[in-house]
Length: 381
Image 1: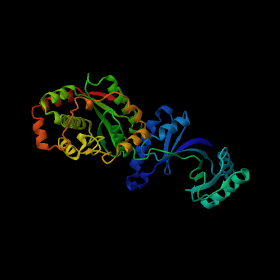
Image 2: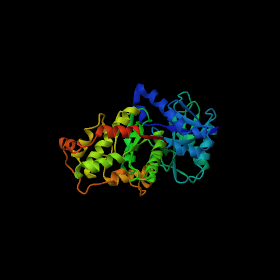
Image 3: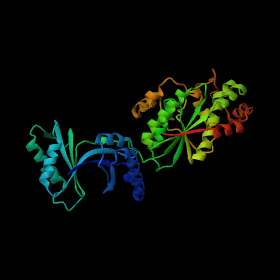
């Protein structure tokens, strides 16, 4: 008999003949997450198991953050040949619990001498004999005593929800435009949860934004990296571009032109990084640069699709999600990003592409973008 952790997955069940690819990748991601715990991870009979860990609690904390993990169960593995031992262990695992319970057995080994209903009845009776203070409720029990009969018997009571989604790397790669705000980390998390590998692009305008603003963005990337299995951050020097836009372009178009420059640079970085799409945290109508017309003008300069997972979200919804994934407090630190530099009083809200191109014509765009891309600072978190 030994303690282990049973890891269950959800959506991967639907992948048919492609399921082995997704399972192999998920096992690899779990091993990466538990490397510091020196844990043994293996796949057997539609379950992923973790054993020989340094700390079960620390392993669980890490496992529930891995995309693709539906739930995590601290379990006991034991020999299935002695049914009375199974009953005793089930009773022991109910210690300290009160209220109602239900035994839920799954018999994958059809050679086992009892079927699932018989196991439920026999183990339930044994527990009630030892714990008359408990009651059985087969409809809405307070506690489930799970018993899985496979190559061995696996018993568990606690089921801890995981992050869900798909294992990172199963659905391509994206370049996330990561500011220091609330929205973009949430957008990156949502895309990574669908199995997309992330790299991040941050625009840095020293001295208008200081080192603490850059550190804040790297901290956000570190929070994302726990579930996203590491994030490479490209920090783009953006001061010269912003100064030239401020000096040479119509004031009401400066924010839109800045966004178009960001898109051009992110597009170039994505090409080098092997990312198929760009990801932003924009939501329709949230600010002047996020009206429908402005988004059309912004997307026109990108050679690859732009994904906006928050496009229909209210700010309240985004804030709630940020709190849930643990980025909100860091995003609220009072260190401004470059988007707040030289903000016009009356930005254009319904721009047209031809007028926007005319407004940015005085800029040496090719040189400015080349210089920014060549001087990118790369950090792996």
